[in-house]
Image (cartoon, rainbow, N blue to C red; front, top):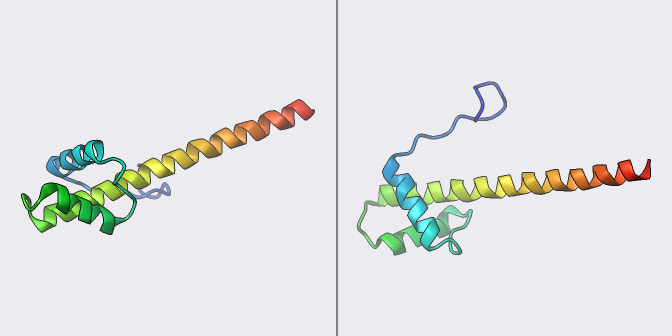
Length: 95
């Protein structure tokens, strides 16, 4: 995250419990976690089975969504960098 005015937004504050639960669910059910809040909400409720409040379940689902989106964004950026590097090598070889 960058300082205000630097083009990026500040992150949300989440409790340790939300982060720990989300990371555990992601490790155990990684293939089922998606960028869709609704799908993650169903998964979280299924995994937690009513042991936690609806509010906490929604927060965990939202954090899972944010984690997946962050991973997708990082993956896209690395692929774009690799593609730009490949294009740059092709240009320098032609010169």
